[in-house]
Image 1 (cartoon, rainbow, N blue to C red):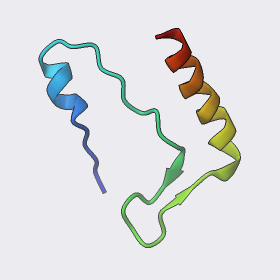
Image 2 (image 1 turned 45 degrees about the vertical axis):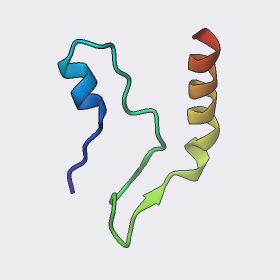
Image 3 (image 1 turned 90 degrees about the vertical axis):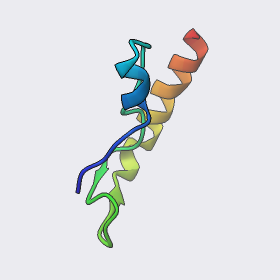
Length: 54
């Protein structure tokens, strides 16, 4: 299963674009889709630091 992001449009225009800030997991958009629950705090901290830096 592939994926996409509206970031493709902004990046094509030369606008700095972030992608991949979501959770770790697999089997996207399938009945077996999952996230790695133990990674949630780490990903949350990453996003919080990014927002703080802005």
